[in-house]
Length: 119
Length: 118
Image: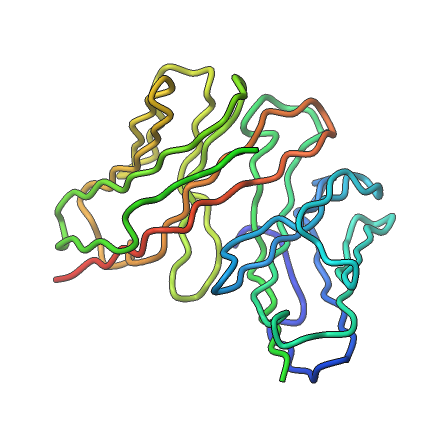
């Protein structure tokens, strides 16, 4: 168990709908990352938050948005869903910014993922 | 931009034997980290091992060790005394070294599916 939690585990919805995926980082971790794993695109970085602020954006669609709340949990919002959005969505957290040294500070620990199926 | 290449889509090894998974990467960065993550059938992403590029010594974690060749940009994973529980997809990943609070995304390879057989 990595200490990162994600809800829900599975989500089935229809095209055009909107869903929210939730992530709670490991206790004390300030950085949260979202990744998408799909069959055709592999594992892709979507977005990073650090202590409530957006820090980096990857291949995230305009229909997708995220935020990190004061208690450090994060939500990924996916709207106007399309069939191609079906994927496994991972959240990860790292101690980056809490101190510590090098790799230990920046290592990312993953949650169990949310499997999204768009019908 | 960094790229990570895993040229072995699938591999098989017998229980108790040793297997090596290959990974090469391309970057102009000098300070970075390399990781191997394991994804078993449960789909959970599990950290296997980490290597800091500035360290010459190869990382080791129990039965898992790496052969890090910085000049060749090669980062292979050796699994000794393979066990059935090692059956999984293995991903090699690259991360730029960042300062405190700065972004450090992971760039993944396409993965190697490892099957451990009796």
